[in-house]
Length: 205
Image (cartoon, rainbow, N blue to C red; front, top):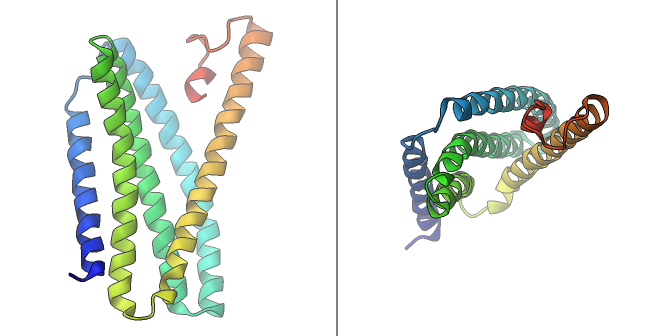
């Protein structure tokens, strides 16, 4: 069997499995009203962060795409843009599902650690399957287009890696800033313990 076809089937299978796990997570209970309240605060903060990060990355990716089109050609720029989009999409899916899995895993922990672990594990698996599936779909479909010249799809990996790097660095800066803000304001200015639920910055951290 054609290996490119195997990769294409594996990519679709990974996406379908991710959708199945996400649907299972969303069907679970979210817990008490207080847990839902905290969950909504986390969801709003994460959505604001994703929106701001997407705006910043999109400008940079757009500029690089234009530069690649002028220097290496249209197809190289196209594969770069596709890779960046697929990487950002996988990260967005992973973030949204993780937020939904968090509150459900916390609720399941009140029943038993095995169920809480399963919920959290499934939430992380969705991210892995989405990333793997989208990557395989992108590579295999472009491989069918370029035929025996796979060197032309190197831009796909470049775009995906660059977007992941931006997201990783941006997320690290965001969480570290939240951690320092929670410590400084909470412990020094207000005098409450570290990671106390009364401190809103702890949620971001």
